[in-house]
Image (cartoon, rainbow, N blue to C red):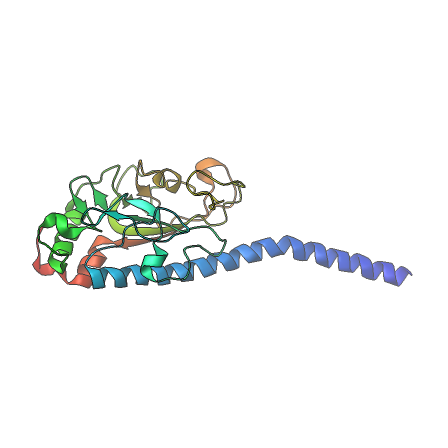
Length: 245
């Protein structure tokens, strides 16, 4: 009986340790899977841009995954959800089941990367797209236009950079347990500057290199995963060197 008691105690300890480790291991696996999937998403968006001479517009909801455009193709908003249906992807959710957010460069000065026609012409051409990309790359930082924070500044107060588009996952974000106003099926929240950016007021997104912080409150806690695509990168992929804004 004594031996059996000892065995049961040992089994209990092992189970206790296993259950304490399991959530962390699961989150690590989810983070790795999400990062890998986001690489494929970026490739899909890049392929769409090269084929259509524009970026896909954001989707209005995470469930539909269909880009929202209006008029001659202007995105209804610079930020929304991933247009996974438009891109031909199977899902718009990360490994935790939360919908990806997607934002593109849309300027009040009529530089809309989902609608290059604003630079003239009757069809979207590489020349139209190149003009928009170069105009955006040369533009000053604006609060309501997509840009990312500096790697050394998490407050979006200096050295920000305009980018073509970003894809964001809220990560685990264990602090939120109920649906938010952003989408009825999105149970997680964003941290840092991303929490403000998804509201569309100040479209400054945290730099993809920002380090994770599992503990803390408010801006101290951070577990978002961000992928950003630079304007100069897209300019290079389109070979826009012969065009000037």
